[in-house]
Image (cartoon, rainbow, N blue to C red; front, side, top):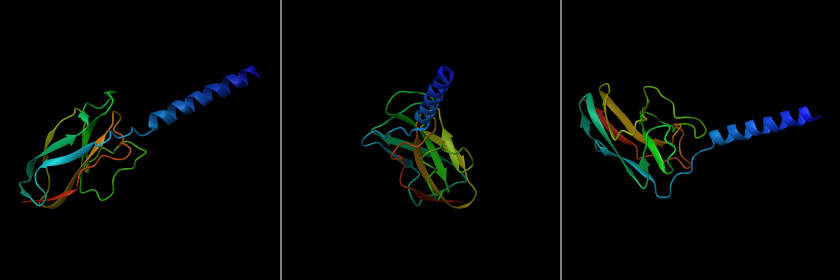
Length: 141
């Protein structure tokens, strides 16, 4: 009986820890993220710089546990925000800036593209509620 109770207690602790590990980080009150440049509707070269801005939240590298901090993720041509209960994907449409970068040089194919920022917490998870910028459209020459 003692062994069963010990195992049950251990399982309970592990489940609690895993639930806490995936719990969304609360968004700081008033936190905002925005694209400084280019402007919405701009025409840009195939390689161009995107500058990121934040308000009421500080930037910190991924893995940094400092409260009220996050880092940028640039969403390119993404129609639907990443799932709230999983890390933001890392692929051609979801660029990670886990060193707390404030700008990036990106290269896109000619045509119209959408850009949007989403802040991630220490583990690349979206905040609750998500901290996202207005989506802008650029035309790449």
